Amino acid sequence: MPVRKAVIPAAGFGTRFLPATKAQPKEMLPIVDTPIIQYVVEEAIASGIEDILIITGRGKRTIEDHFDRSIELETFLERNHRDSLLSTVRDVGNLANVFFVRQKEQLGLGHAVLQARHHIGNEPFAVLLGDEIFFGARPALSQLMDVYDQVGGSVVGVMEVSADEVQRYGVIKPEKVNEGLYLATDLVEKPATHEAPSRMAICGRYVLDPAIFDILETLPPGKNGEIQLTDAIRILGKWQPIYACEIDARRYDVGDKLGYLQATVEIALEREDLGEAFRDYLTNLLLTRSEVSR
Ligand code: UTP
Image (cartoon, rainbow, N blue to C red; front, top):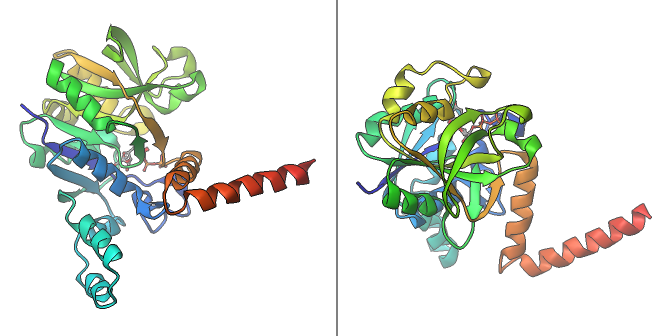
């Protein structure tokens, strides 16, 4: 069965970005001029997804507004002949079939995914975390979907991280199938460095069998008292193969301040309208700063 639907969990508190996230969702923070979640939605669409469910929570209304039409704004731009901006604004409202459901209590990523059960039904589906973005020749999710088409089961996206970073991720025990493809024979959420089964970290992209919902329904809280998606996938692995696909793309954890800054600078440098002027600015800044520090 093809993967047609995707879930984007975006209900977390975003405590790493306080105070900016006290009254606005971190998923709406802009990378240059585009909210983070729009990059995620565009990746899903570029991967062939037709139906997107965003898991939101209290204080996340602006996400819904962003993917809605804004008739007043469109009328204003039309009247003032701002045609290019008008199509930018209209295009966002027409991106895909975007639906929303609220997670009423922030009980963890696994619990957020469980909120999608009714909408997804009994078919395989994709999960894209709302605070990680990827840039590469091929959309990150499409790489997992290709693996799923070939081997079935469930698929997690992985990337190698440094030994001191494993404690921030779900980590797999890999058994190599072929170049860039592994069987995950075990999964551990946020292991201590000395307990990690490898340095292959799960990074925000999944294709999951709907059997995951039955597991999530009864799963007790795990690390940090949260219902962990990694724990549910580990249990799923007892009945079906869990594959891990090494994602070939640049990845930014934009829910983290450093990752956010890196994404902003690199994407600004690649923009046709900004890149050259921004590059000159950064070069001058670095020259001036290094002279001052000498
Ligand atoms: P994170 O742990 O990165 O997000 O969860 P967070 O909790 O918002 O951020 P910090 O750590 O406090 O800064 C990964 C993804 O899961 C979603 C988040 O929105 C994020 O996209 N999530 C997490 C939920 O939707 N619900 C939850 O209960 C927890």
